[in-house]
Length: 229
Image (tube, rainbow, N blue to C red; front, top):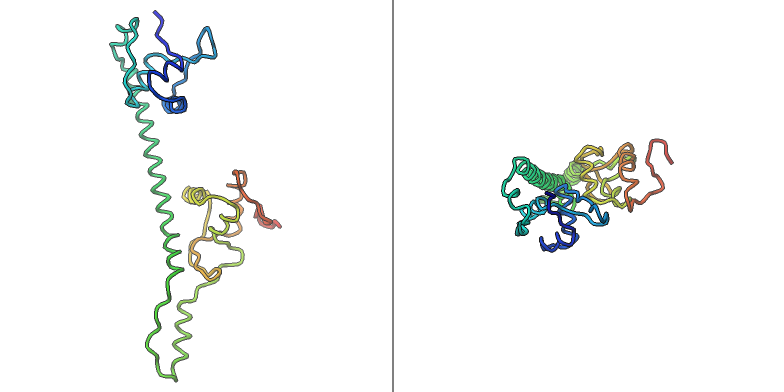
């Protein structure tokens, strides 16, 4: 006896979903509809596949086909394994997404701290010392707070990213996966503190990673290779 099948219109009606949602469900569960023998334009699902979608997405099960009622009463180990594997895959994907979001947030904390440090108001000066010894402490204090200037062949990561129109999230992901090498420290750059910068080699790495991305903005120094003009 042939197994009961349902075309797309019937599936949408039984599951009470729209076409876009239905297609997304099929993709997540790795279900590939079979073409109709008589009309290849029609794609068909079996009753078991329809029940699997209904169970996964908490929809009422479709009515049991009369001709298949005795057979579908028994749940085979293979069916249970397939359902468990599908659920495990969905849970794993969600956990991976959460882990990535937490990693990105952790990467942003140093940048936020650096921005706050650059906007802090300098501490109030100490009580005035006698006129004779006033000049020397001032020079000594200035030396303590003076930062090194950013080397000429370095460029701040944030400036380089914005210049080439690449999203902050994409750059943070590349740094996290060690596809992009950056230098960390504290430098003076345009009256502000920079904590993450790139040397010429890292600039070329950046170019190789993102130059094919949609919206990438080239500059006069691209591809930033050693000796390039």
